[in-house]
Length: 169
Image (cartoon, rainbow, N blue to C red):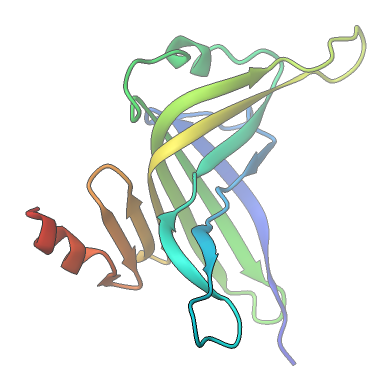
């Protein structure tokens, strides 16, 4: 019988600065292909056509009003800011701890100051639209997506290399 690996602890970094103790919650970017249905003559039903990668967004909550990301809000380039998540996931059956890291570059697109009430916990939510994303587990690159450079690597296989070669990368 197997047991799941669960997040034991984490840290979030912005521009290399540790935000230990300041980020209680984050949402690792969801990855999705941008697709559309296609059904041509003679086909029994539609199939899904791959149209590239859908938008990638990284979101985190900071205790109180966290000013570091606000300094980069409205940046003029799509990869102006860097976020890095590091987490330790322990397998509850074996005790083995896996190292997981997500590195992303992008720009902050949303700051939600939430509800402010004296005596209540206050959090600010920050959202970054990512131009670059890399997922690492136990020092192995699982996924690397660079939207600007046209890089799409999954477990060491660059799924976009042939297209880059054709268009003159």
